[in-house]
Image (cartoon, rainbow, N blue to C red; front, side, top):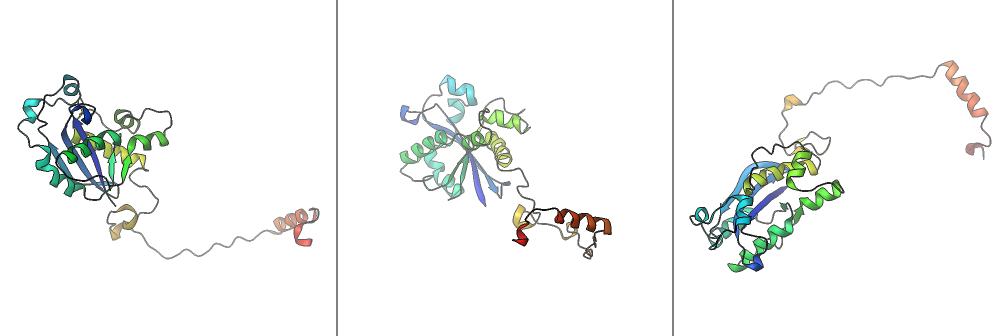
Amino acid sequence: MREIVLDTETTGLDPNAGHRLVEIACVELSNRLPTGNTFHSYFNPDRDMPEEAFKVHGLTREFLSGHPRFPDRAEAFLAFIADAPLVIHNAEFDLKFLRAELKLCSREGCSENPIVDTVLLARRTFPGAPASLDALCRRFAIDLSQRSLHGAMLDCELLAQVYVELTGGRQRGLGLDAATTGLPISPAAVVRGPARAARPFQATADETAAFEAFIAGLKAPIWKS
């Protein structure tokens, strides 16, 4: 099963207030495991970078001015996600920016993709517990040492690990075949030998007598009705 873990960075909180998308990252999963295929792009938002947003992700207007605008990368982005389910932490936020940017360049996308919101998943799994990405990484002992600032690609990689843990860990079932894990199994890893004969377990004379005495003491057993 192909899924896409997705994260964005923006100039603010609301596209309706003129804020823009400045970074997208996607990590492809197959059967809950990263394939190594990714999509990543910074975007020139054609506007200033508010100080509050800069403190979150550290992206400056000067840095972003040398990168393409969203319409220049929209086709590549849509081709990468295709119709795969999108795994997003606090999905409503990212989706409203993606849809706003796609609308600005007269494109459609993301409306048909199934959405997995890991915030909702975490709240169902751990009711009442913090559901931020940092909190979930700490819960699952995922290394946060590189996360001094938010960054879409790093956050995607962390979220991919969190998602695997939220959905049962790397081995979600007890089967170890390729169909279950999505990984090839070496023939050497499968040990087969002659079937062991069934062991006879026969009751002793004392056990038989004790059982018969127990049965005789039952009042109106159903098999005599």
